[in-house]
Length: 195
Picture 1 (cartoon, one colour):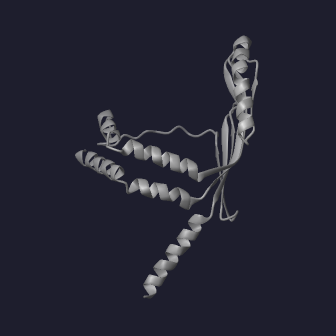
Picture 2 (tube, helix red, strand yellow; picture 1 turned 180 degrees about the vertical axis):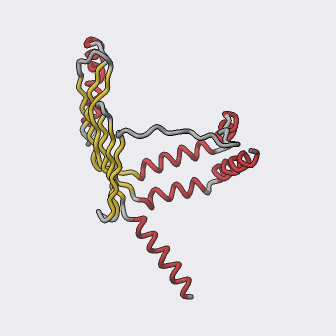
Picture 3 (tube, one colour; picture 1 turned 30 degrees about the horizontal axis):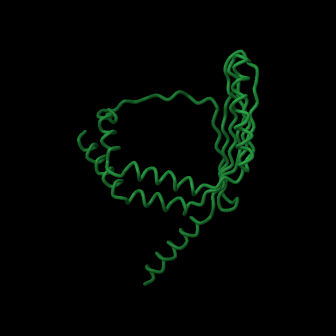
C-alpha cells in the first residue's frame, strides 16, 4: 500500500511541476556578426539557463560507420505516405503553436536590395503591410530601408515566450499513441532491421 502512495505522490509532483510555466527570452541580431541569445527560466526563476550561438565553433568531423548509409528517399516517401500521418503532424504543429504564448515580441528590420531604386520600390509595397500588421498586432514591427552596395538583411528581433509543459505534452502524447504514428514507427523499425 505504501508503494501505491509513493507512486501517486510522485505522479502528483510530476504533474504539478509540468504545470509550472517555462519563460524563454530571446534576442536575435541579424547584423554581422549574427548571434542568438536565449535565456530559459523555470520554477519562477529558481532554474535559469543561458544559451548563446554565433561564436566560432570548431568544424565538425563526420565519421562514417559501417551500415550508416542514411535513409533512402523512397523510404522517407513511403513513411510520409502512411495514411493519416500528415494530418496528424499538422494537428500536432497547430496544437503546439496554440500552447505557446507570446508575451512580448519586437521586430526591427533593415533591408537593402543593393540598388536604392529597387529598395525604394520594395518599401513602397512593404510600408502599407507593416502599418496594417502594426495596427492589428499588439507587437511592434518596424522595417527601414538602408542604402548598401550589396543586398543585405539586418536588424534585431527580441521577445518573451511562455510555454506550459503540460499543455505541450498532451498533444505530443496524443500524436505518439495515434494509429498513424504507430504505423510509421513500425516502418522505421522494419527499415532499421533490414540494414
